[in-house]
Length: 444
Ligand SMILES: [Zn+2]
Image 1 (cartoon, helix red, strand yellow):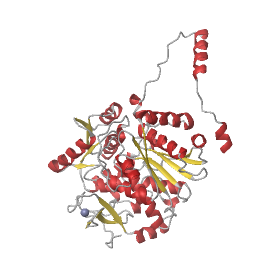
Image 2 (image 1 turned 90 degrees about the horizontal axis):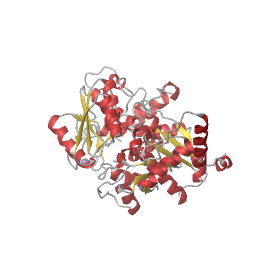
Image 3 (image 1 turned 135 degrees about the vertical axis):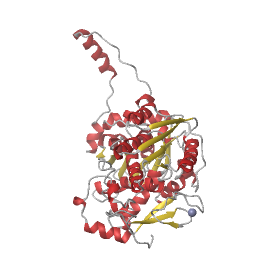
Image 4 (image 1 turned 180 degrees about the vertical axis):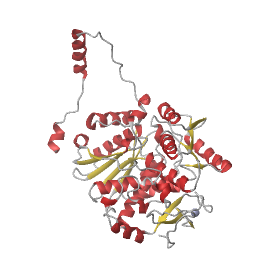
């Protein structure tokens, strides 16, 4: 915790209730001013973290009851890094606060009596959890008075940046590595962003984008603005605990790519405990990765402190980050909390998508399928007691990735005539599979 005092940014008359006081290196704990433009520690090269005055934050929380707070990404603004109220007012007013859904039918399938889904596939404006992190980047960009934003993306960051930049009136430049998902790239362009497709994988494009940022001075949502970007991920933890009436869950299961979400869930849970809002120490965090790109899960299982980079080979493109920047933070978070890492093959990932769809009527992308597949494996391995509260985070919407899903038989066209349609329906009924709700009833 820093002893600096939270101060207004230069030239700003209105200040948010943010209790951010500065930036600190994750490794060597060197401190930098909050308004600094440094995004990695000049001494050791590791990322920077936003630090807060938690005593002040606790006082603010007592002063402003939940009912008087906006139901959006700024609900917990004390623990977010944006200090300029006018910048904050232009971003994320309809972001965050996604539903926490009781998943009785999926829970019955997995033998879990208290399973919930944090449904970020309904996130505004771009239908993925990335709206949380990008809202902090764009607000920070506005705070700095900048008019252009870049990003490097496997898909969802790009659409979030394109959406939020358009709403904020700034120009967006999205760099996609080779394996871009068609729908997401077209969505970016439809939203007015300029898209550059880069020969190379995500990790290669990410390294090059750092150089582009240095050469041009352009801010990148998930590179130069990264300390701010990462803070947005904590809001998922805050909301989950508040939506469970301040009873922290026993387990959270989430997919991991670069590691921002899972490491900041850990930070967010810790902050709720520091502020006396909830007992969160016993919440375990488990991460899910595809078998074809599982450097963090592998390191967790081996209890190693750093990840060994891999070359991704997976249909879960949004998780195809072989050299995850925050991997070491995830390992630390998961091991400290007594969680674990798991992985799933591409066929298991698509089976996970189908299981979620068939039981909960929720269509997710391969990242969500990875979470469900690993949740299923952890449940089968006895990692959860049947009455424990388990929250699985569904990080993205399946409508964006339908082109990547295994092809199902295309329906035959029949005559628009009663007998032909009855015959077709009879065939369809014979092939229909509906997961039996009998076990769900037993649990109810
Ligand atoms: Zn350092």
